[in-house]
Length: 374
Image (cartoon, rainbow, N blue to C red; front, top):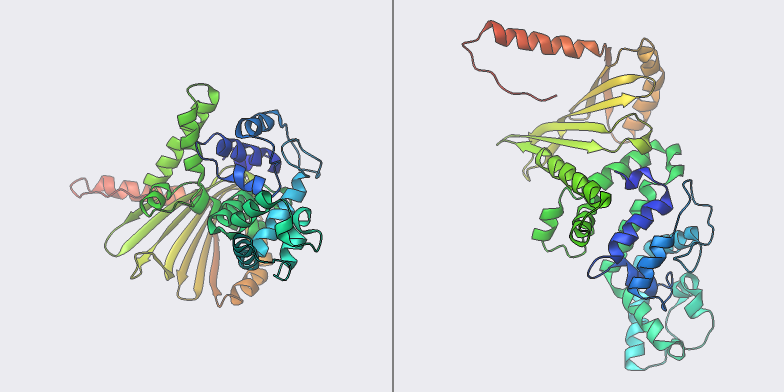
């Protein structure tokens, strides 16, 4: 949660420091192979450089920073370029690496993308074997490993999740936050170990590494609190029976401009593989908005029709809903969905419904009750 509340560079500093302090760093040697971090710096020197790095509180302006050989934004663009050309880079790197091992002439092999992405190594037309062979070979090996692309993608996701410009694209921002919770936070950390997903680099794993390497201090206490929080989310994440399944998620709300984290509740019939049936399900959004205050959106999906109930006490909410309904309908139609109904009700009506349910149970004390969750 703290990572997502910081600027880009501060978020990356936290992640890179945790990686550098691990017994077997993943990102540090990879960044060296890509020429982003100097080859002359050792592991301890890299840790020291990260400690001395004091990123600005605001968004990066692309200035030269201590740990990297280039600007922070330049590093980000280079990683995005690598991920964008992943398949071709892997194919070309494997061909070049194989030719280097066999000692054949590499001048005729394809290297257009490598030349564009890594001009410091491939800026001339001389055979690659005549370059600094050890450096180039380690770069080729890094580019041929699928797990390295996954590590770079995780790092890039941290940057995207804390990127200020995404405030202008709330849909992408919300999806990025949800993906961070589902994939990178560590809700499936134990399952990834069970399935031998050695490429997994989740936030919970980094926190556990930090706890192992830190004996005391405020950092350890904060890390321990976040681990307990993630454990609680895991325990509360899914409830299921033979035919029904419920899932609860808590999405960090700071970057989305809301006053508190967003609570999502999913429920529906089970499909054959045990997941929620997307054609017959219910989604509840529990929001605390700056101007609209407490808001609950209750969304029922019946095949391709949506019935939406909005609980909010603001008098302007019905007018706002009427104004935005055409845009909502148009967007849903592109996904082959339609709006069956949108109903606005006072938020306080939820409390009335709860009281009515409670009083009904009190009037029949001989009957058993059941626990329910909102």
